[in-house]
Amino acid sequence: MVVERFQLNMQEHQLRHLLLRNWSDFKNQWNGIRNFYVAWNIFNINAFYSNYYNAISDASQIATDNLGTIITIIDPVQDTNVFANDLLTALSVGLAFIPEVEGEAQITKAIVTASEQVVEFGKFMFPVGTAGGEADDWNAISGSLGTVTNNLQASVTSAQALMQSDVESFLALVGSGAFSTILGSLDNLKEGILAALYTYLVSEAYKSKGVFISRQFNTDVHALQTNGTSLNWDTHCEGVYDSNGVCDTFWYDNTTGTTYGLVNGPSVGQDFNSDMEALFGTYTTGAQLFQNAVACLPQGSGAPILNLNSASFSATCISSLPVYCDDATVMPGRGKLCNGAMPGGKSLNEAQRVPPSYLGWGILNNKATQNTEIDLSTC
Image 1 (tube, one colour):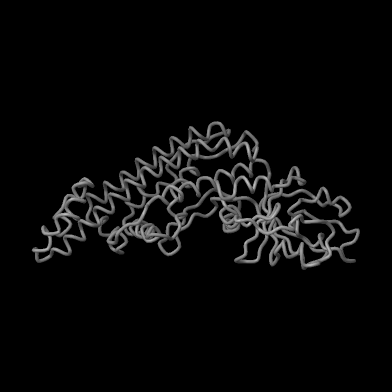
Image 2 (cartoon, rainbow, N blue to C red):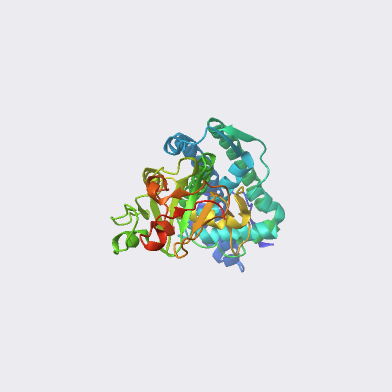
């Protein structure tokens, strides 16, 4: 077989020399082109695994170094129950967060496809559910993350070893042609892992202090503030959305026309503008924090779930904050907390006690809302 023409664990410098300088070794063979592409795939696969192994370590160390900053920004309840299995899932699914540039998305799809075809390979690449224990406070998370990182690196190394020794695994991985091209930069591997890991940690920190998401459909808060609509109070969104989609304490999803915000249940008056400015674009994004939480709704407020499917590879519940759904078109109307718990009603004449991100019917200044209580309770 062609694969047996080469040792699958050849050193990178040997392959580079073989491929880039000794094409003559291949061109005179009757199957020279096929042999060349087998060698080329081996070279690219080794390069990928080397980069991925290092990216796991680098991302974990960077996240550990920055965990203190995230804790300072969010000020979570110190006692928590972050499970090692959930950290492992968040670390493992970084491949799903890699931007679709320079062929990286195709590589991810090839890995997931091979994981579907060869079960043992998939268990090594995505060893979710194999880490025991939990961190009972935020100071212990760094230690848990270090252990989980070592476990994942060892498992990924086993996946590479299986691919090198098992023809079925090798063919399953290279069958799509993702490794037959010239690979671009793999720097985004680390960024993808960090995006998933940071979003998970930010979500868990907020959940520990009773924070949930407010969501207002069909509402551009900046337009609402500036188009002449009579409001009961100022949204403070007079300026433009910044580069991260933030305006005051709101994040606007211009793809769906939905405005999101954060609400601190035990302290509804908290303004999250400074949090968003510090977190978005550095540790997470509005899309990752809010849209991932919405995607988690069918599962409830649960642990991260890996959807290992080549057609729709994703990680559900990397952000699992509860989501409060309101509708300003229904008056007096009642919103619905899609998962979790929420405080009771607040009077309109106590607007300072209404969450700054509230955009339900009570914000509209008309006869239907005068002297009416804003009901923030669960339906």
